[in-house]
Length: 342
View 1 (spheres, helix red, strand yellow):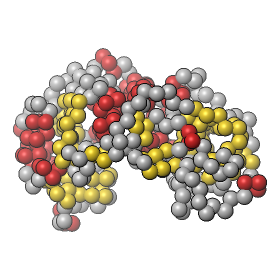
View 2: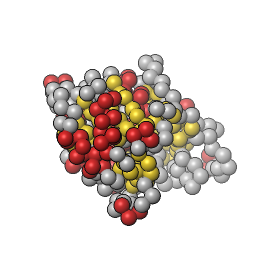
View 3: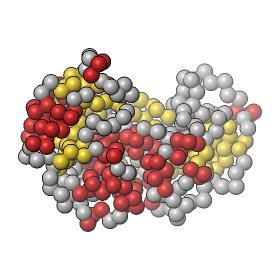
View 4: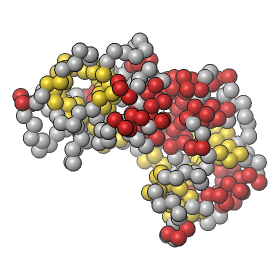
């Protein structure tokens, strides 16, 4: 299985900077926006990357910004920069929570304004159920967040370096933050961890949209049922129950996707068997396994007869970016079980 990206899991201390005078630049047509100093240079702790590509607070180029004429935002509270707020579950969990780690050590409802920089600047994104639930675990409500439509100057900004960057690095403190989310949502999960030894398959057959799906996944489900595997559709229950169910299970399998990210909120010791539908496995899954103390075995979909679907008539769910077809569902099921050692 080819892996794309880096797999750093350093346990070094992360930095949190205090910036007395910051320049906030919202995303534009050709720029992701971010947080900068008075010379329009990126504040180091505000930079986010995916692999080696800068994804936020990228150096500005050809930006006609007159720093001296920018409006000054007045606030009686300090700001806390959290970066981007993604409305996709997997990206939200890995990127939009990666700067919340200082809140594990600050008093609940730290008296600040939470500054985000996102192409989706509508306050409605903060009302999305899983976003609202996860932020609430840190005593935050949608009213605590703010984003601006135009470049401006902001006084007194705390900037925490990200504890997770996709396809690049993850820190144990990020894992601690996610375990805090899991235990806050679903109770003391260590009491139920790995108590159900029946393998479970995380299916996408009922998912209405996403990155990728197998159009004949129901056939894979049937093959796995005959082999004694439970079939589960995570999106049919709330986030708290997703965390509880994944905590109960020791043996977890499925096509690689965002559902595996939820394991960050669960206690470890899981055995994971995944089929990667794309050509290469993103290194983020390897980082997550290492942070959680899970053992993951990943197989290329090509090795088990998975191919991109070319029959548009078979795919009734066009809201997926990619659709795949399993030529031999039984082989797919057998590979998942074999790689799990069952």
